[in-house]
Image (cartoon, rainbow over all chains, first blue to last red; front, side):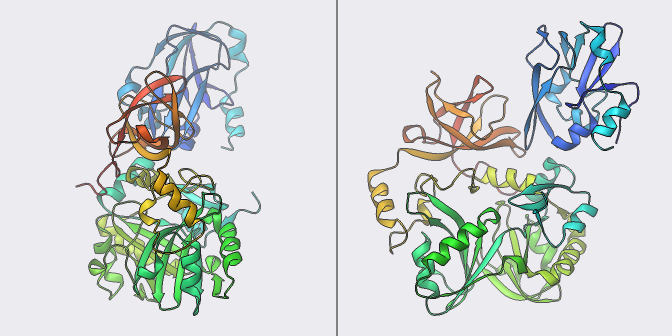
Amino acid sequence: MNLPSELKYTKEHEWVRVEGDVAYVGITDFAQKELGDIVYVDIDSADKDVAKDEVFGTVEAVKTVSDLFSPLSGTVLEVNSKLGDSPELVNSDPYGDGWMIKMSVGNAAEVDALLSAEAYGELVGA
Amino acid sequence: MSDLKTVVLNDVHQQLGAKMVPFAGYNMPVRYSSDLDEHHTVRRAVGIFDVSHMGEFRVRGPHALDLIQRVTSNDASKLADGKAQYSCLPNNEGGIVDDLLVYKLADEDYMLVVNASNIDKDWNWISQHNTQGADLQNVSDEMSLFAVQGPKAADALQGLTAADLKSIPYYSFVQGEFAGVPDVIISATGYTGAGGFELYVPNQSARQVWDKIMEAGQPYGLKPIGLGARDTLRLEMGYCLYGNDIDDTTSPLEGGLGWITKFTKEFTNSAALKQQKEQGVTRKLVGFVMDAAGIPRSHYPLVTEAGEVIGEVTSGTQSPSLGKGVGLGYVKTEYSQPGTPIFVQVRGKNLPATVSKLPLVKGTEE
């Protein structure tokens, strides 16, 4: 399973890449495999403040729908516009072009509390 | 989880990389590669499904037909040898115990094929009505069932049997040698709309038949297909899934199964159903296609533009063939005509959709 060591993870199967005071958020390789083909990503939280663990959107696979939980508190600065036409990027490149939101990091302590690749890997049995 | 049953080829599916999920009490392959790819494989070429979880009952003897006529809604007296019929088991409260296929193997010799989730319930129900002593046998644990579906199914399988596959009409079957196994039921039926065959095989020969089909299908692009694509394929055709679209509380007439509810005979609850037919139903199962981005899911409310609730989604998905959300659901009868605009409440938003004629797509694609 692909679990880049430079990323942080949540038990809700999101990954976080912190770049200074902003963070990119997406779902993990494990999550996209579990969901199957992603056909629609519905995020209407652009420019909104979200709390840690708050739902910032939903991801729809052929078979199921799953909520997306914010790994951090902050403001949603940008939603990946490529996912509108190409939601399958979440399957093909979950840690790259399949990113979902860019958000501000409101509380650095929350970043420290996220899971390491190793800890997340244990959680999903990788 | 410990009481999850397995199909004979459980290990084969795992070796093929299938994601296995519990379904109807069985550990079943939901997908091998991708739901979308598997869906298109069946619409455009050919795929094989292991649906051995399905239940099979044999009904034999001089009272076999009487029993089937009593418990099912369709008229099994119309079946000739080698013909199959879609039917349902009405209950006494206006609902449906299960939907099923009735095969006539010969006079006084029938096979009923029922949903895996209902095997025990159906067995008890039919046994309870077996007052005249038809010879009833539950052979579900002895039979495997493979569905080979798609426009290239006949070509892919023809090398494995002497039976002329293309000459078997829809809802007909032959019994014969297939892949070296005698007495396989080769049935021109399926749950995809893409054409093809369902093969009833004794468990001890299941591996042999599966392997030979995989090999023979290779030049035709045959792939194993999971339950995920099975659901999108049947939903595009508007085929009911028991437990979602029809159940103990939905009448066959409400569920669009009036065509298999024949008042040419008496059967369980037939008097009440006949009255319902004469008076008309107040809700109907319809297909619909989304006119906005968004995917209907089971239990989402169906509403009018003003937000008045007129029904509920029973099955929904993104249609791989249309690239749009599609669904089945019950609506008040006045909203059931094809072309009627309705709205699906998706996470608090009312998204537009249109009631559409079934099937929603053509069963095969170029």
